[in-house]
Length: 48
Image 1 (cartoon, rainbow, N blue to C red):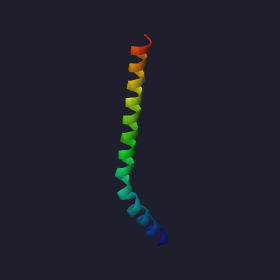
Image 2 (cartoon, rainbow, N blue to C red):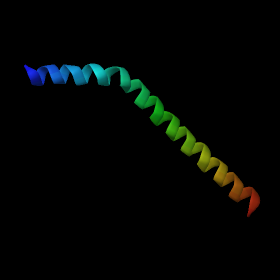
Image 3 (cartoon, one colour):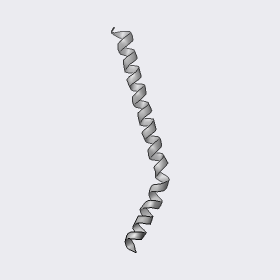
Image 4 (cartoon, rainbow, N blue to C red):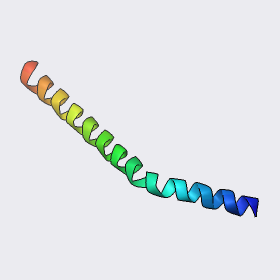
């Protein structure tokens, strides 16, 4: 009964947090892509 309760408790907490984790991951990927693009642009325009 206690394990079931703790599982339900964890599940109820994790459910609302899931979209925030996904949004954070998406933002992180977008930031990395933007960083890579600006680095490539800087290298191509500035050095070669």
